[in-house]
Length: 249
Length: 310
Image 1 (spheres, each protein chain N blue to C red):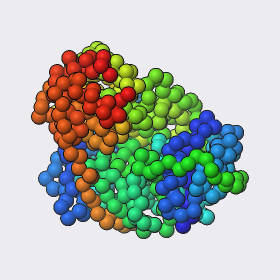
Image 2: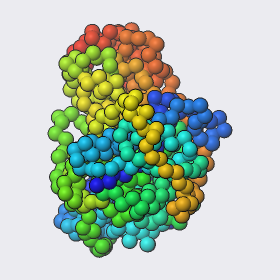
Image 3: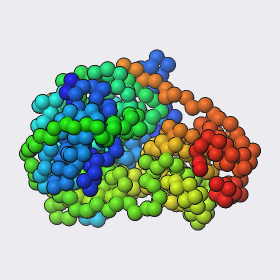
Image 4: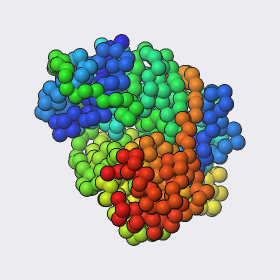
């Protein structure tokens, strides 16, 4: 079985995003970029499924600028077998990403798609569900456990207040949550090896997909700033303050 | 504008998040509510009919709609959307599971986690884990949104008397099945909906100390337990307790950060809390820049003292 793993290049999770002074967006110039953390978990899960014998090939795909090729090299260094870069400098919305992924899905015919539940830049949490709708396949979102058996996959999902388990027919779309696994670091030899793994470059036009946006960003602003409050000198003072504010009984 | 709201329910009861979604939807136009489920759906529909602001309840009762499987519920919602201009779901795990699937079936872009409605097509939503706030305008013929429950008041659960209309959809798509739901059995409140959260960081030293210091304080306050990514990475507690950009986003009335330095990652997950208390040995820790009340102290002495004095 082949596993398709879409990955996105995003601002590194340790970098504080700065809103541009003209309110047009977040400044990404000279900012450290990395693979979306949830996508790293997706790559790791695909590799583990291959190690268990449930998968034979892992294809990583990314939609973005030429530099997204670096993110694909990271996926290859972790253990993906080959990669596809759908190159575009436009900001591509989740619906358009899902349409491109559907075209890749049709071409590659994977048994499973594993992808992050959301990207930490636009926080949309849509692409996996949309890909599932467009391909007419089932979805296992916010996965904390994935078990492939024959022609179905059992997914344990992190839902509000508990864990839900669903059984899905293959091919299926799985989106990863934090608890699924801890991604490995790519070793130096594997980073070297990844440089020679195949990476195909395409464009949205190659798949006949119109990526024009449906949403117009009118402005991006800083969130309301929190003012630093007061410092107290002792636990007694803290308790008194909390009681005065009615925060504790 | 006519709006269809997805009703989230569990064990025959309406979930609170639905009430906030009704308030948000009412800002756009006339609200109809969709209750999809199995045998219990009738009871839920009757409760929904009583929610202030709901003008009509659509009841789809079919075993295929039990457990809210998106493969079955999304085609039903998409079919009903022929008669509506907007689809609104609470931004809960259920809403987030179903709404994007509906949006794709309608070929529209969803607006996720909406926290403000500025016009019929203009919405406010957090991006970069709340480190930036975007105002966006949709050009799609129909709207699909998920709304954050903490950003809208809850509609009154009683007082309405909407008619209930039975509807039918495509039924079971035969793609998926429900296996089990294991509800969290914790005595403590759930992290994302708790009124008070006590979180520990790397300074707690190890798992045993975390358990000895953080847990009794949380229990004393009836609070949920949280942790920073550093504490999770160090193995003090499992990662479902992680508060932060890649963990849970919380906004309790009181957030107590113990031995947490205040990395951006962590602040993104808790800075919307109403009252933030920080206890840290380092007076220069960034956590004090967002804390309403800071105590510079050795947590190994301060926390047990605090627990005993509350």
